[in-house]
Length: 113
Figure 1: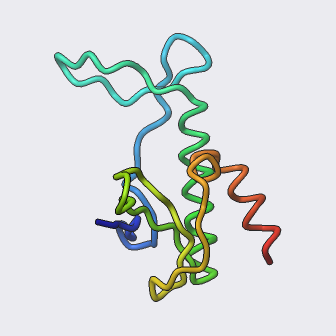
Figure 2: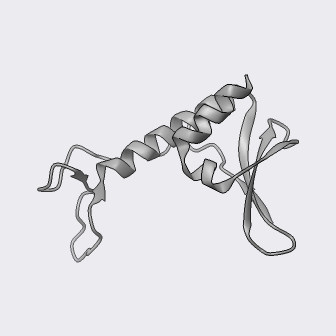
């Protein structure tokens, strides 16, 4: 099994907008508007920063004709990531630690060019 992050909306990798203007009482946290009966905790600003960085990286990869693909390893069932071209052709494996750390992945991919 494998999957790729597919384009959303009119722009590739553009997620629907979320109102981030409402802030929690603490300065370091942002939150979705509260829904009656919802007990979801506020989402920290640092998480939004990482989401924004990941979106920019996905847009840059798409502009270069590349993407990150996630697969299930055939032997151990773990998640593996790879860099693929616009046709889904394998370019090279990626360490999951690099994929999760968006800044590190952006630096590493920048070194390749």
